[in-house]
Length: 453
Ligand code: ZN
Image 1 (cartoon, rainbow, N blue to C red):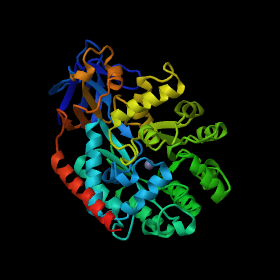
Image 2 (image 1 turned 30 degrees about the vertical axis):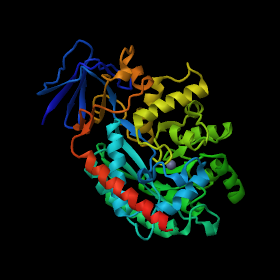
Image 3 (image 1 turned 90 degrees about the horizontal axis):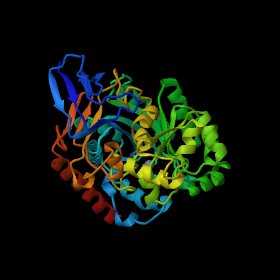
């Protein structure tokens, strides 16, 4: 068993206030010592990694994504549209997804995330069809090949157009089938261990694409099996209108009615809430995943992250689907969060450290993984190391501030569970060229199928 001292970094941000100015020691997948300035480890080590040209961060955590949407980035039919017309343009394309497309897009998105310093990612897959009934099983296999930790959520759509919902019937399933599949996936893949690489959560897509009965039944299963629950909520003003028209209540009232106002729940976007609703979400200790790029591309609005945090809501960060961003780069997303929140609250009210906290500790709180998202003895050895040896950083003062203010975009080294997954800016276990070739072929097939419709 190798014990490695990652030594002498430009800076090491632990996220907890503890210092590790002379790096940290990793053994058996865990952090076993933080080393103070000018000190050497007390722990005996047999390997020393020279970190003198990098900044060390806890591995970044992405709380909301749709890996499959990497296949429809910058699709002409969906450009320059707000959420509902954007979705309606894309549903028919996504109805042609097959297993190979899911495998390729999962591997591409996870590689892209890993290269941006992201060691843990939650994916919300909600498109299932007769040609692709087992997408999550395919994702589990694909994720194993890349090596990030994943929380794969069994998404779903059960309220088709004929019943007043938004999606076409080709991508809608019955509530009973969704629930039995959810239970099977939990049995087959949900690993509850501290060092888990794969967890399952339940994720009906949104109020406008599933039935209230499915929401309620999912909450019952989550309570019984001790699982997390995820959905889109408060993304647009149109969603509020839809809920008032269809259910006679606003989204947070709807959430409460179906037993989703509790700490198992994290919501993607969380923009269009009034003060009273924010207080209720905070009181219930729900989580919200801020997705700044997506919110700007679709012009959905700006999440009130400070107000949510003050009320008690746990706030994390997500890149959202790569058809509304259109990239899967989490360190860039942290910069976007810093910029949008400064604009919203004032330059002094939101710092680069606030954005880094959201991208690390915030995500760990949302995914209930206290052993991730910060660097401390006993925590998992998930690290993201960024070099500042690029023209964009030249002349920097504060190395941590430089990461976000100068626009870091690629990690030099990334470690998951004590194993290097990225070295010198390249994947260790995979050929990114092969992953891209398979992915672009799948994307092209999807576009050809679409033109036949
Ligand atoms: Zn989303």
